[in-house]
Length: 414
Image (cartoon, one colour):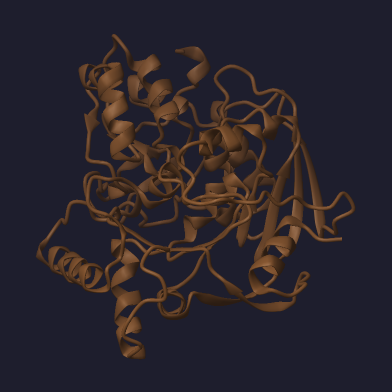
């Protein structure tokens, strides 16, 4: 019997589809940001189709190099703005509005049962809402712009059960890194992943977004948390359209099942240069840091900033600490609540909402031989600057480490 992915792709293709079948599916929402829209639009123009398939179902946020860091970036962004106006694209989010994977959920595009395609690998974030969401290349996105359709091979599905209650100082990011360590960076290649268990149900929507965001770091095509009351409460008043939740059948066919208990889990650290090179924080505590980066589509949400501010309030950081809220909405809330002031008084730098240093674009690129502890999702060589080393952690661990100038256990300072 069908999994969530099989049901959604059956619904959107108009035919019963199971794992390994090929379908041509109707896309509900398509997203390309300032980095990928340039190539997508170029390919779209080469198709010579004239108009996009639906001006209201295309979302374009500027987030990767926001604001533009040089003349070349400025010209490319200018060309996309002209195309957006020419095509009448309704959902354009300019610099400062935030990271695409935060902007879409905040504005009610990430909905249960929908097929959402983004020209960015971390589009799987929207699976936190029970959608089938995945990333594609620019030419595939151009095809979607033109037709509203995409061909897909229906993925096999891995079921991951997570039980146990996370202890104080241990977060959804730690759980996510632990899962990746055990499944492996290529353990879910072109598979969908469905998450179940009491530990998953206990997660907030922000935490579920962290979990699903990093499904791609296991090679997964999609990561999905079945929608529940938390999902529906989040979407009240913001959902762009009606939606129908989709759930796997009780006897759904999974290609593999993992069972984890996180009741005794410690804070986790992903070491350079592979995301699944994960150890407990105690194994790397004391490692000198040149920079701490808190933000990204993985951990730049308000809940994350709350954790960081709670640890830093009334204290001073010992290494440069850069904070990028995931959206304008989050930044405004942080200002109004006083969290932004707490971070600034502690010596942190707050940069405009966006991706910035996560991809080595600007506002926090590291130098040769420098070490950065980051709350983002990738730590491969050269990601944040040639010759630098990246460790990945939770916001709590990042804040504790900023205070000491070295990797530190958040349970010892919070």
